[in-house]
Length: 150
Image (cartoon, rainbow, N blue to C red; front, side):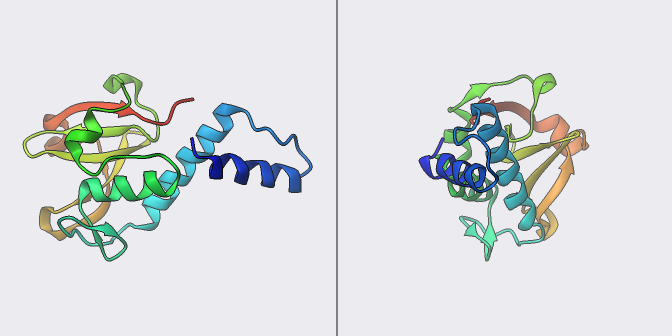
């Protein structure tokens, strides 16, 4: 967790007259909310191989950008992302978990309610929200990892 995030939450608490030390789970929840909100703000941005900004993303570039912008160091490749964090079962997914797909390798961010946000090269879709049960992704699902802990 970034010191910047903790300080930002503490500043908001001070302004609102609340305790200055936020609970760890509220910080984690705020970070996940911010990650998802930022990712959603990129809906429609085109797919660009190697892209990491609003001019274009690839799948890991989107995850890399929104996690790193929110103080969570994430590597740049799907393989490296899959090797970090804590493995979680498909039945235990929480918003903010990173999904890993194979054949071809792909990643997305679980946003809840059976949906994930990702940058898709298929038919130049770019950043989109897709149901995890969509047949193409359901058959390619490999693993999930949690890098933001409660």
